[in-house]
Amino acid sequence: MLKNELISSIENPEIKLAAEAQAGDTLAEETLIRNYSGIVYKKARVYFMAGADAEDVVQEGMIGLLKAVRSYDADKNASFGTYADRCVTNQIISAIRSADRIKHKPLNTSVSLSRPVGQEGASAGAADTAEITLGDTLRTDPADGPDEMLIIKDVTYYILNNGDNIFSDFEMKVLNEYTKGFTTSQIAERLGKSSKSVDNALQRTKKKVVNYLWK
Image 1 (cartoon, rainbow, N blue to C red):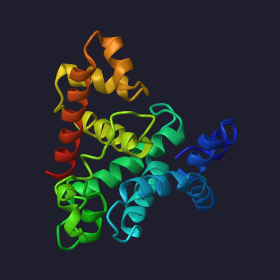
Image 2 (tube, helix red, strand yellow):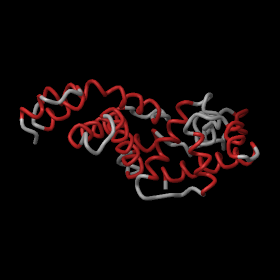
Image 3 (cartoon, rainbow, N blue to C red):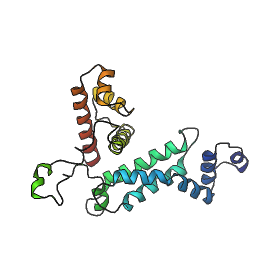
Image 4 (cartoon, rainbow, N blue to C red):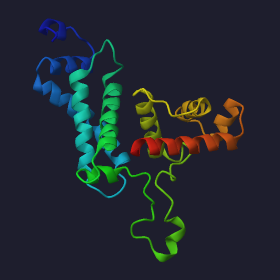
């Protein structure tokens, strides 16, 4: 733990709060959690997609935020906000992937991108959409689907930072451009490829993201 005189010399407010929290100051810990709880609720809104209890996702996110407060190292990590975002994301995705189908059914269904959207309450005239999954609805134009784009960015980061790489070299190039906010046509121009090949690569990466999350 840092000594009090060292903590008092820290100028950055969030770094100082983190240091105080790690030194045992519960008020500092509560302040950081309150200040950054918006990250948790944003993630919960994005990952909660199938009518289950959203509190399951929120609870996992809060665990991730608490881990961020207690493990943040200003010398090794970026800003606390960036670090907290990653810790929250990792906790939620890890919980989703490891959740027992029955014991944690609400959490399992909360991000069921592979469930057919017409599976529940489908009318007779909706048979043509019964096999369309939430994963299929992830758009390839960042401007049209910010929530979908966030899921892809989050899971891609999680995959790469957990020692896995399920994407081809071309798919990684497309993903890198996509996560910068470029559209399919812009990516095609930047990479010197056809829009069709870029779109196909994005479709493949979306399926891989969904499969990875639920394998």
